Length: 362
Ligand code: UDP
Image (cartoon, rainbow, N blue to C red; front, side, top):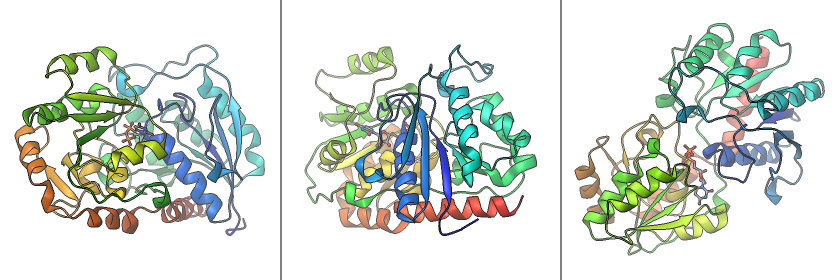
């Protein structure tokens, strides 16, 4: 194994093509990993659902598009829901292709949050590693992760300690954080802009609480992201004065960060154990302080009093006070913190160390 030039196969999420937004934060994470590994001089082939595209900055990566039907997202199924794979499902096909080409590569890094690749791992000769992208939302998935930890603990990695704590792991979790290309995010100094919120519009993201905060000030809330649950979205909209929510749609990173950076504060209100929370770091990368529930990833990403305010989960009154105090935060500190803690090259280095240690541990 040539440590200076490793060859990786990456498996994308089986929920939507890359660029669709349906894969949530995994999409941006994948791009950061590809970019970072290339920058370190490694080679990457990405196996992803048909229609997937990578930005020009990932030009040297090969992408293999695979046709097939999406998996359902686990977080929108009952906790006790069984594993199901649709006919012509894309998940087994992504695995098929990754395994077929794996003999020419040092390792497979799997980013699909799904049962099949986890279950297969002990039965495979190839070095397959799993970057787990969610906390526990399904009993079956929790079992699969807990069981794999018993026999192959080093094959698993997580984004935050809060996320990893959802699982009963055999040892200390490998926690990798995430990474961002700061060149993609421009610092904006303005402090009189609107309030912002971003994410998949779905109940686990708690948009209703951010909307309540904006409405209490007679303010607008700019909302970016795909609407996964239309009836949930219209219910929230009808609970506040017309015009409170300004739907901005799902934008590419360039346009997203441009609009996001103009906000005076970003509100993040997860109702679940958020694995990481890319949007929190993206806001801070633009200089926007974040007010968030101290729950899941955001609880580890925000330095309360320096880059925003963490408040008690589900306490909307505390959110309102925190938004009022947002001018106590220096926007420069927000960006500095992202530069220091989460650049994509360092993220790729952490990934390489995880993989190499896991291979040597075999
Ligand atoms: N996002 C985007 N354009 C938008 C709104 C959101 O590209 O207009 C992306 C954002 O960059 C982030 C993702 O959507 O990577 C949301 O990920 P996050 O980790 O916040 O939550 P998840 O969807 O994974 O639960």
